[in-house]
Image (cartoon, rainbow over all chains, first blue to last red):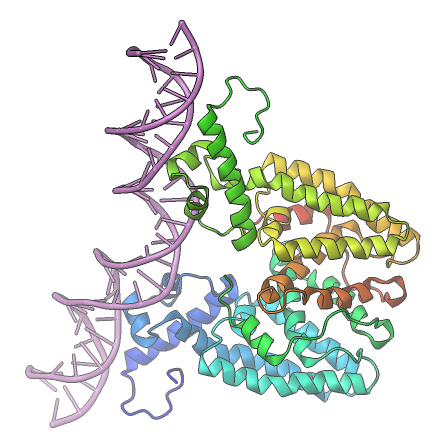
Length: 217
Length: 217
DNA sequence: CAGGAAGCGGAGCGAGCGCTCCGCTTATGA
DNA sequence: TCATAAGCGGAGCGCTCGCTCCGCTTCCTG
């Protein structure tokens, strides 16, 4: 609700608006470079702004995440739409995963922003809602064309992101494209021809929500 | 060097030895239940021992990890040896991964202890050295029998652990056996019949060491 | 059965983090 | 131009966590 000036009851003072913009891009840069774990102070430093200013605009770190979420999600959704536009459903499916992993690899904050975190925040939930049908169409289309194994479900997609994200995290500094190897192995297991009965059902939406909802202890 | 009384220049006083034992088992329990992130204070509380006592025996948290490492690794190595004893190499390979993941699922500290962390510690390195040939034999044997794809290498095993560990982390609280589904997908991609050329070479030992070595920034 | 080394406990330090408070500065508009 | 509301900065709070310090207690030894 805070991020875009929607109904400017009174527009921000010019310097304030400039500062806000600086904070948002500093946040974007900092998250990409170091992940959402970066101290808020580091963001303030990058934005050349005091802590007070930062917190005036974004009263909690979560609000910074929200402010950056939209763009990150746009890239994510763009990848899905691009994939759906492709004729060959399997190529689309595979290309989608490749693009998403590439995004993760070059933006350390993305996975926290998308896959986990900020679960309660309304905006994050809205975006997940927007993404869901795209993932479903992506998988179902690839299944209809006989390429993707039939027992894979849209609810398995986050699992793929979790696993891939971990591999990216571990290897980004050492072999930035290594995730492609892991994805290759996984994709070979997702082809319909390779399918062997799976020993466990997919997560339900409810389980997925709880798994995403953090609070690990 | 501290964990087992090897050359008792002077044996510990009886109460001291008892405390030490209590600390070690409290550590084991705490790591299993909450992962290595558990505060040292919590371990002291479980052991019913003061902070001073704990730090007298184990001057750094890393030393606690070392003290517990051995048992955790024993289970790990036991799984590998059991797998190598099996006739069917693929069944052994698969069974090994299943056992390791099961261990991870019921012991939240295991993955930190084995796969990452404490990279420099001599004992951890010694154990990795002991594990390495087992992993290699496990993969090569399965390849010789034509079950495991030929382009998989022993250096890919940690990658499998990373990915699986992440899935376990995310789902343990919600569907404790869900990791079996992820492993099923992955295994289908590891079968020789499913193999498609991989887009990236495996990690070298050196890269693996650096990836394991932490220091993410 | 003492004298003294070995061991114990827990208050507290310092560092890192998210976040707040409030005296000072600056853009705005009458 | 200048009064005033809006905005700014950064010291500092409160919390967690790894770790230290040191006065007191307990066990071993002669």
